[in-house]
Amino acid sequence: MGLSYGPMGSLLPELFPADVRYTWSAVVDNLAGVLGASLAPIIAVALWRPDGNIATVGLCLSAAGLLSLVAQLGVRETRDMDYAARTPPSEHPPVPVG
Image (cartoon, rainbow, N blue to C red; front, side, top):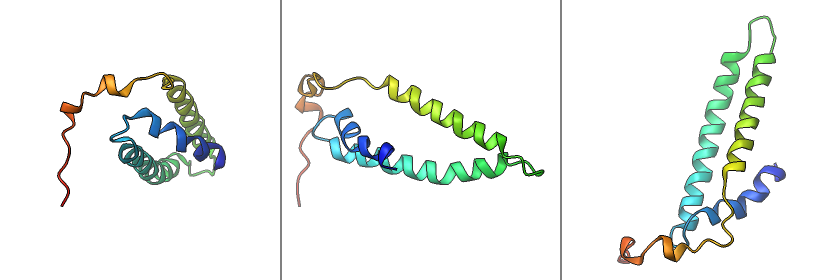
């Protein structure tokens, strides 16, 4: 668990501009948790063959791992990204409080 959740604390927030950073990283994290926790068991049960062979479940898990690797390789480094240049303040007006 630490191997997957450890880097997420720094990876997800840096993908978004500072004014929406923690909101959208929380949305992404929660949606991934809901979809992964709800769909994975349903798919696994559907793939489990009546004769007890669970090889297709293993193939599905391997495919999910490969998809995760490809997605991770597609994430760009954000160290030198200037978010202020990407999102003008006029596009994100301040929200009134109260």
